Image (cartoon, rainbow, N blue to C red; front, side, top):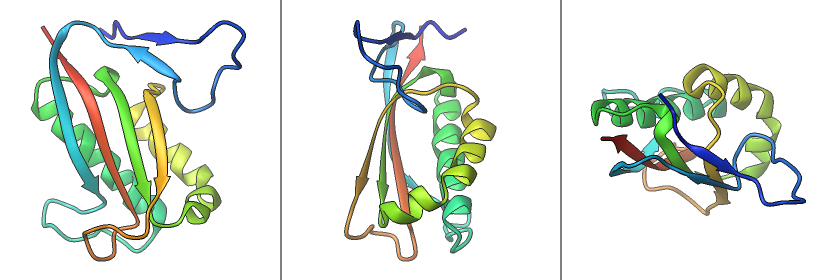
Length: 134
């Protein structure tokens, strides 16, 4: 069960695809390191941005579930992209991938454009903070 409380300050417009703030239920904190779009073999799955985005999300979900939690308990995500233009050009596919992997759960999020990522060929890296419920 998801007991997360989405915070919407009075008078603010509801954001689309993320929460401004979220209060997570009690539990142990889980910090998921930056995940890129690679498979379990350690290789980037594709040069396609949407494919990398989906795989990075799947990798975050796998880490969260391995800790005994679920995506509904992710309170915050930070997305690092090497080209925000590529991100915005692929929003439809990004949205489809999001709903497939994360459902309708939208944590507090930030997206940053960076010069590069450590892993060669990576176009996106996603890190997350979650709660493992008591």
